[in-house]
Image (cartoon, rainbow, N blue to C red; front, side, top):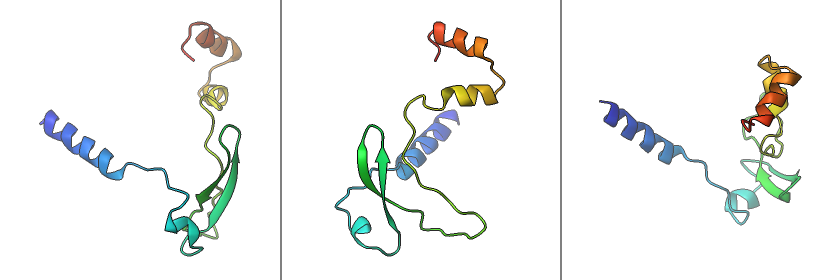
Length: 96
């Protein structure tokens, strides 16, 4: 049973895997049905991406560049209750 579940999960992951959108894609050349956005990334530079096609007046969305690896690490650890000493110890031990 566990093997069947693992195979199903693996197939689902492959099926729904997000792929990089080619900038030459017709989706990015046509203004409808999604808006094109130009974003600035600290490493990648300026790039074109698609906006959120779902517009909800009570739940607006913001589109921004992906975070850098570890960019929000300390903020998240603090939200989880870790203090400066704990975070420092994790860093010294090579855990983060």
